[in-house]
Length: 252
Image (cartoon, rainbow, N blue to C red; front, side, top):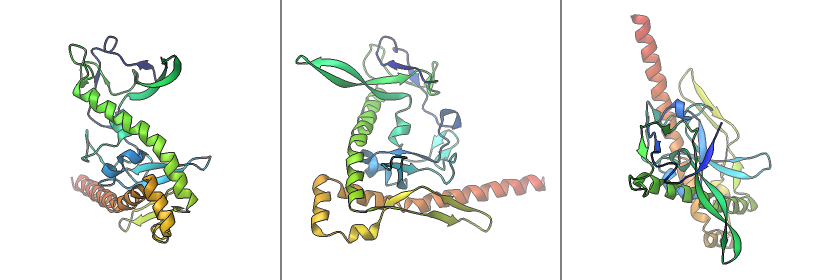
């Protein structure tokens, strides 16, 4: 069970965070939340899709594998990509809100909390969160940037997806592929920007998207789709590796 505490350099002066990866840290998942503020980085390596929640609202996800508990970027204790999705990079940290007063008016200020039951909390192992004199470590400065990006991305995403929806750009997609004679993959519940509908928008609609800053997001989502082939190639490689090991075991 999570146990959240407001991060501070007194209570948590010796706090460390384990940086390696593995199923024991919750990394063996097929998709993770993605945010518009990181699309430019994500689209270089990950396919980004949209999913609808029970209320019909859209949220974006980075696809990591073709099964619920398959992460094809996970390679032993390494994450085999140059960019780590923000929701993974943030580790045990999250943004909470604290009631403060500014010019006599109550305001909700974002503050950092840490989950002390998170599996990445290290006991003498991992990156220091605070320096010896109490200042922020480079790692904590990075976490602050990551959390800021997530916070801004949540705010930006809802309005952007509503704009796409209003123009009929978000459409369901069937992600199915035959990897070899014995293995096929199928992921359901995914949506994507419809390239044809986007291309058919009139100048006024395109201008509205551009002025709102959403047109770039649409093209980044489309650009990310080529990374499905990368995932398929890695899946095929692992299937061949597994078959080779099985054959070697039988021969022995």
